Image 1 (cartoon, rainbow, N blue to C red):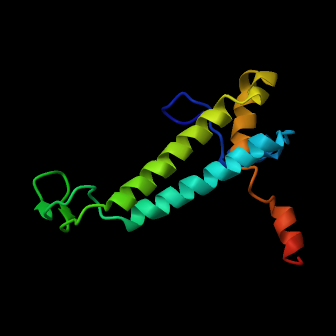
Image 2 (cartoon, rainbow, N blue to C red):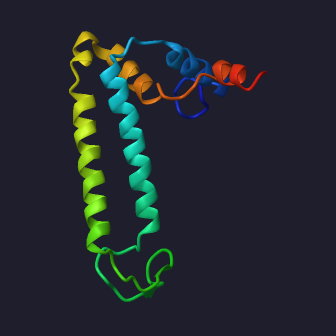
Length: 141
């Protein structure tokens, strides 16, 4: 038991073992579901990179400094986003939504129930990652 919490104590190595046991399960995902998840990863990465490059404000705004809150906030003046930038963000967000709906409503999920479905969805999110042993083999180790 964790002192004072009444909850069982799970040492970090036990949590890690449980995590690896769960992630180690393999699922026979349909190719269209795998492709959709991979594209979703790519779209989200592209959208994230684009948003980091763009000014902080969609509309042109003056810069400001505010130290009345619990922390100081400062922003430089923003020229806003161009129409092309707004259109690109909208296009990526729309595609991200389409892919999320496609993945979450895929017929494959009806084959699984309860915790199995949850573990499979988690596994799908990491399906594009190479297992450590495969990466080591490619590196010649």
